[in-house]
Length: 94
Image 1 (cartoon, rainbow, N blue to C red):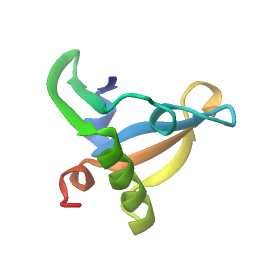
Image 2: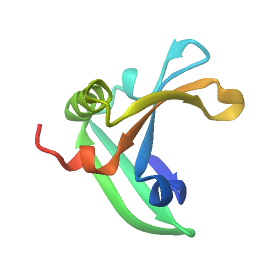
Image 3: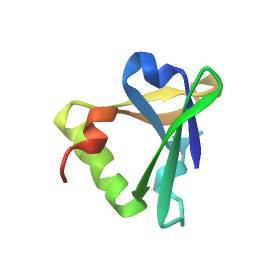
Image 4: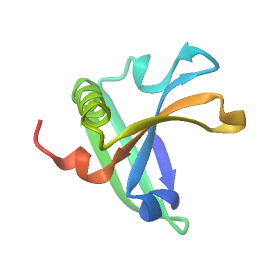
């Protein structure tokens, strides 16, 4: 479960961690079957996106490969590799 606070509303993207400090993390290592992404705006939960992890991995890969999404460094000290995925890419058919 990840909470996306406020910034998603302005950018139209959600952030999904892929690696941290040179080691795979987040979506790349989760053993969960489902991924929940909570959307929060001004301290209030406005929605929850849920995906089977296998499906979300496909969506992230396609989004980045097709140019809608991108991988950036971010988080504390920019130590995390993060996929920024447009919300619209999450709802496109696979």
